[in-house]
Image 1 (tube, rainbow, N blue to C red):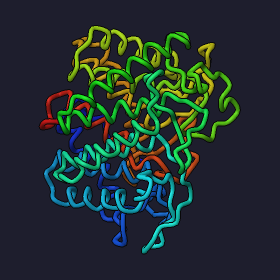
Image 2: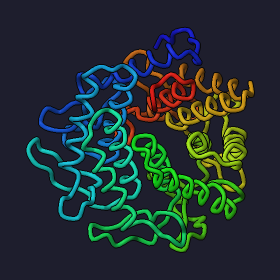
Image 3: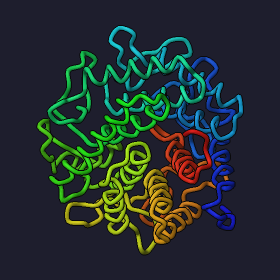
Image 4: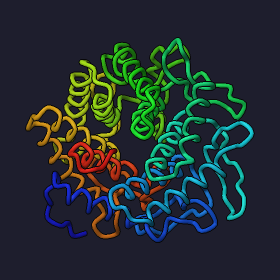
Length: 404
């Protein structure tokens, strides 16, 4: 693969062009005329599974199309938002319980539920999708957003912990597992829900979640963000210790979640300023890059252990994307050249290793030596949401988006 010369990664023109270029990988092949989107792609764009539909992909297609509509104003992206959100609303949602299935089999006419677990992580992305749909002109999404928030409050919110439980069965009985990941994405959703509606309850909930995870819970885990907790919100150091297959609940400290929280704290602060947001964001960013940057091959490793050793040396696309976004937001907020240096450094690594200049979009996962061992560019959970979203976040920080 021929790698073009590195562009000016700070240029708004580059970021806009790159977002459109990534989305071109999905344009013309993502929309299933029978309903919703195709979710599973090989590196060359081949759809390798036309029937399985994953809630995370379904919501993220709403969001990416909405971002492109906001950046370009092109009607095809607004149409994509409506096409994707209609499937989310009318197929994934159970009209009896209000819950959203985690995975479906779609035969072109009707859906069969493959996994009916109710995940708070999924509901967070449902709310985020509805907020983006509302910003893209789907006015009906305002009521859907409010309904989903109320549903999460009823079934997942734990007032004593000031956090959400993680998962439930279709009867809404919650399991004993508690996790930070669902709460992080709930915080992300609440920030954008506030931006879309102006309703103060959303930004206040974002503040509550952010403090509970990044300050209170972090104090139980070396002042860092641990992923897994027991039902009483005590740290579960053993959960998934020997299982690397669960992409939503990996063991170890996640550098990408530290930098993602850094980004979210600054986005939260833009709406609801607090003295603790910026210093905590800087601490979390430094904790991540100092422990996980690969000084030999470049890029941020996936996970590190409580003793600070790398426990998972792979490189994931989303970790790099969230990290360059956090670096840019910190640079804009503080004026420190060191953050722009990190931004350029991470982007340059991505340009040389993750961006597929030949076939389009980004690779999903590389090993520690930056080799790609899979032909699957976008299985469940990817659809290039993170790299599109990170670029969008940088443009927003630079004042290059309207009302985002």
